[in-house]
Length: 224
Length: 227
Image 1: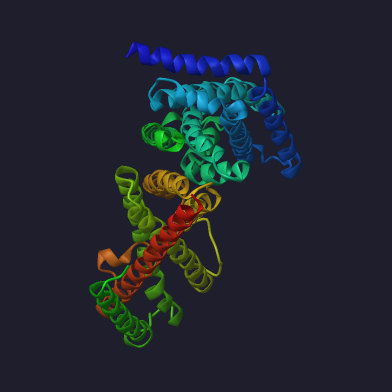
Image 2: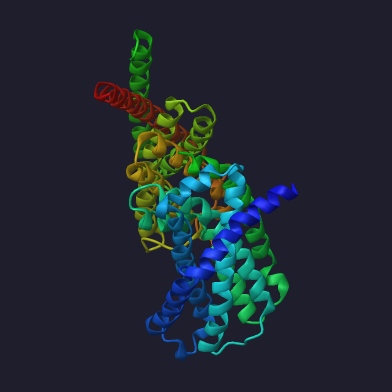
């Protein structure tokens, strides 16, 4: 068991190291997410007293779009120099590869969220200290990345891959997006825990179900 | 590929489907009473509900076919899942269209972000993506594998989406059918329509499946010649 963790960690660490050296995913996606926030500013006038109503939506649309870009890169880097073939040749279970890649994209997404969320809160003049929002982000990111890692690997192998990932990914994560927007609205409005409990439960259920499903399905996506 | 018995079974199905479809038209348009409040437009319900039922059945078949394909790796399961997805997308599109026509008359709007409408639309997107994965796959077996993965992951999503969107908002008329809120004559008409559309579904999937198997046979023969 501990050997399995070591292997998952090895694949995860390889992604982290290459990211630290190239800064290909996090930097680019961060700038993109910030741009989406700024563009929304023009699309909806947040000064007109509607901030509380539209802010959660803006945050999650920015985060979802950024997530798609990031998830696309996670397997695109494996496609270059055929490193995917090398990964496939590793004497490890397919599950280990999935968990390693998942841990990588989960970490990248959290780093991105940790930077854009405070900027978002500042830009829209919202309260800064929101520990409950952190919980929502972790739950939603886990859901996004478990579905996203599976479909990123799938989309990498077919034609029109850049457009196929969002088409596969978005309909499936609808429950997470609704849950994240509703709970974020509750947090920003300072609502009680009880108001967001059902949504948190749905998000947790989604995370568990798709972690299991994606783990089981991954071998069919990666086999040659 | 089809032997005599298969042909006979097909002919019987076509005959049954034709008779049922005529009966369904009669039942929906003449036999069923006009609804007191909604008027004649309510009759679209006799097509809308069977279409929705068949659409859901089709996606259930995709789910089962996908699991069996990944397990047994037999082309026939893949062909059934694929054929069923095609029919399911067509029927679900018709559900959305007939629903919109009814909504315009009953609610005064074509579309609303109600729970069932939204859930159906999300489902429709999942299976459109399924067909797209087929189209963009680099080879036949890869398309079969990838779309099977989506056929499973997408179907598991149905209850979660339904639950989430239901909590979010709902406006659709509740399922009166199961609560006895439907006049007996209306129920009979509905059941005949459901039967007619189910037979139509079976016919379409049978034909599409055998077509896909023939196509893959031809593909195999072509590859043989090339080697």
